[in-house]
Figure 1 (cartoon, rainbow, N blue to C red):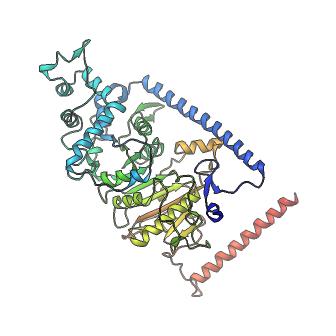
Figure 2 (tube, rainbow, N blue to C red):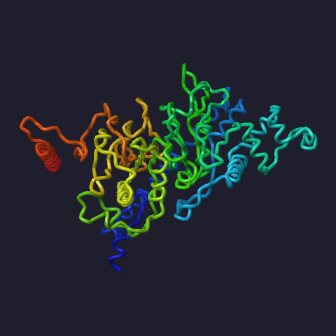
Figure 3 (cartoon, one colour):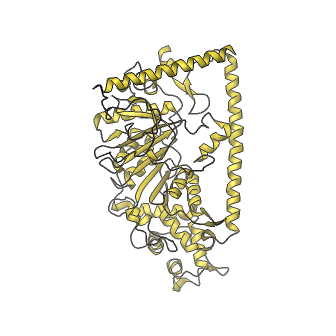
Length: 522
């Protein structure tokens, strides 16, 4: 019907360019759109080439110096088998992948461990690293792959050769030899033992640092790991876990950690980031099956991919408070396929620290997608309010632009900062991630770092008096329900403050109108 087609949403420039599916009134508009897209593609290709060139130069510099990555095969093997966990492949966030399944138990933990080791062996360089250990006469590795009785038969051209397929026994012995007696994956629950994952490695400077006291942060959809590696470098007192579905991006993240260069004294040296663990998995199943409940301080989601390009969901797209429709009562029952669906959010909630200590922080450049997420949260919290939205008082440097579900969920605009757990260097040129650097080339409309939309939540309960101390506020739209203005000398409270804000807004509007009239006259 005509009504149904009018509610369709589609894109002309990718999933981040949603607009109403109406033909352009002026045919030239469609042509200009194609021209912009072609220009954007050229900028994207140029940016990608510059990124590759930068990576090649970094690799060249590392190969020309004495580095841990090139000289210490034992250290790299340890780093790989503790900081690189790959559980799945593919490239989809469809509902068949993210649906709830039976959690891992003792019965299949050994099978999962074998699959993980095989992934490292064939796809991430573990076989080549172990071969270097064999060539260096590592007795522990020799005893695993070439016992004394069969050592002579296993040699080919004077070199000990490794098998292509590893048995369960060899996998277990290899893990014990390189990682230790305590398993990375718990045999009871199937969850990852992050204390064992982040244990100090042989050769670490801070080998005596107690890893179990460090807070755990997770980034979902981490891409090639630029943001997480920067955070780990600036905040060495906490641990970071990157979760990404694509194997090539997981490998890029691990390479950034292993080849990390520390600047000092006018020179750079190889200093691997040991407080980052790279995980290859679908986000929902990882949070549900591999993370202990209540163990994560903050789950970050930076610029998640929006859902499929077309679906009938006009009420999930049009705003929060102040909109003409009752959004909460008109949300579609079937969600479009995307990473941050309700099941993933429920799994994330389960992993966060309780009593207001755990946070879920979502940053996006797409206000339409941000509204969809807010409406999904409203529907979820109506049944079980285990999460609450961060109030303006907790993020004073962000500007609240919309509220959803009786003002329980807030959508903010601003620059990601320490108030939401984002660390940024004082002097920093370029973006904190691949996409930030891409936008700064002019490939998108989002080169201004302040144009970000932020959704912040925390677990319910607890005392929040410790947050946002010393953070300067710039123009929050209203103080929020949990912040009561102090009464003035005349005994007036909230109404007096509201009247004062309205007068300020009126003066601002008058100045803007006058400026516009002056420009029109010119």
